[in-house]
Picture 1: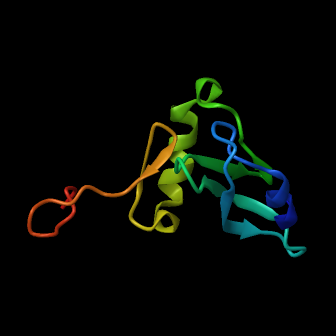
Picture 2: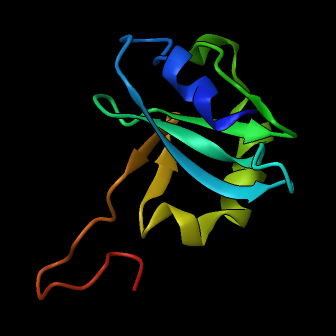
Length: 100
């Protein structure tokens, strides 16, 4: 996917703007792996082999996308993936992540 393509895309659910996170690109700057995140609903759309997966939720397969996001965990900045959305980690009393 060419980086300028993001200017033509919007969230398939609420039509909001998307933020791009690039994980891998080729020598020409085309994005091979990464994800787009909706600025409003936090929905995440993976980019696989240069193709953004922009299907509405009812046509997406969580089990197919989960392994990608597990590999890209460090790019999620501590957030997790739930119902095709990025979710902030739960904080327990004392300021620790619930996963600790």
